[in-house]
Amino acid sequence: MSTLVAEAHSSKDLARPTLNLQRVFDAPRDLVWRAWSNPEILVLWMGPVEWPAVSATVDFRVGGEWRICLRSPTTGEDLWQGGVYREIVAPERIVFTFKWDESHEDGPPVDTLVTVRFAETADGRTRMDFTHEGLKSEQSLTGHKHGWTSTADRLEAWLAANPD
Image (cartoon, rainbow, N blue to C red):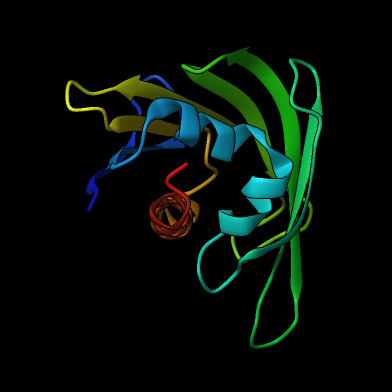
């Protein structure tokens, strides 16, 4: 079982909200890193339960682009997102830009920044510290909090089913 701490706040330094999540997984850091860095694995858990990924194209290197298609199982609607990897420090940190392809209820898409940090715990588990900066509104913050929390749940399930 993992533990989850979620905090959503508006940074005083930025006009746009920031999402912070922390999750501890019952899995070694190398496995969690592999789940984030291998597109064949990433597509198996990325996206919230109601919008799972159906395709992922990943050029996992600094300056490389990524694109993921999420699909609603109920309506068949697709949502595309993508970005560029800005920093990769294996197996400690991934920093990438994030942007939806299409407008949502709160307006046109904006470039945001995601930082994911991985740390080994004393008991062999992995703590993931996740930050999504530059969200465009409180509505976007709420939606992304739900989406990333559900995505972490799916990652946890994948890790439990694939311990090696």
